[in-house]
Image (cartoon, rainbow, N blue to C red; front, top):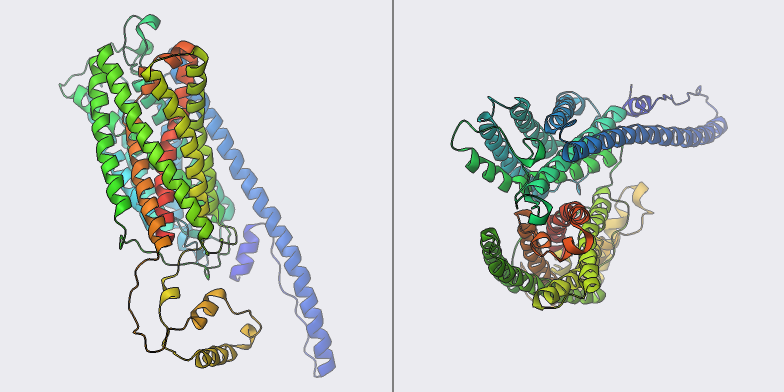
Length: 586
């Protein structure tokens, strides 16, 4: 069976090309050839429709699996948070263990069996899973493994009075992280052509499992960071999910439990980002199942900082200053002194105001440069680019939500004072910055990369010699390509002529537009890292400034912040990844 027949059989149909008896008559041969072409067209049209129906059925089945797993998981997560008596963290972890084991088994099956089949992976999507994205996955995976080790060591101290499931879950999760990281590193670019139904369902199961792990980690980390005000409880405290009511009656059997618990909570942001990275890569693989990839538009991109200085330097200054203010904020808020807390909040607001203002100005300049840019917009569908744009817009909704709720609270209460004025200014400027940054990144992702060879000198100094050479090259191509239109890249390369007598430089300095775009991308990238670090590692000005809780009531405000903030944190990290890609293509 040929590869085409195997692919057809995978979707539920098999066709065989028609055979015709040979004849010595040339007229009969001509008629026969025409009949064969017409029959082939009919078969290809029919086969295309059947392939489309099979693909739609496969997408529907895998989507149903995802919807059911996610909705059941959301119900369990919500039950474990709001009703610790009937459903607790142990029940949720058992559900996650089952998901993780099933997903790990499928990934091993794909790696050992499916990917090694003949004609299983005929194409690779060069845009999917770039090396810097897989490198980030490995880095976050290592931090997640360290977090699981700390969890196991911590829960060993509670084994005498708590469930062993809390030790089994991080152990199983660590194996899952190892297998998944290996799987995505090797197969993130695969366009699978065999066992497409099983592969699509397996990838959707992988996506669902990572989203459930993300949801569980975000919920646990949010509960840890949520502080109940004194008027809503007996005392100001952080919740502890180890026992109902937020307090633990189980004492640790060794002295390192407090240190281990604090350490693994600081590693939660890396585990959260790992799950999101893996989810995005699994989705792109799912979109690429059965896809026939055209590689002629792929460009090899390399990272270097040649002639780029101002953006990285200013960005590093902002990053160091922001981290300094973040440390001051955490230390002063932790002391519980209202005066020091207000001072820390003011410093935090000023730092954020400066950051988002400079970022807004930079993105305006970048958008103006795009107006002068002569690069073409990319053509054709690309799952990776579509996902990047969708995630960018979708994740920014979380930050928009918190900002607009804050604006309404400050204006609605008519709150006065420097602190509330800064809070309002930060929220308004953040909304503007988000809009401008989305426009800048999306425009950059949809531009063709700069070609360095467009600026290289040609060995021909006579344009007529160059044109004649290009004409001969085209006519020497095989007949099937004779009618093909000369590609834009070939046209540009052929018509670029160096001035007579000029030297042939090996490398050229960046044009001012390229340099300006790279400076802007580098600065925005570092600022987004800063704006990711502060909320990811514990900055909660939404709770330390009580105006939101007083205006909306504490329960509603907690829901708004704990739902919107994880998306806002992810938006900053996703912006870092997208800006890095824009930097490479500039």
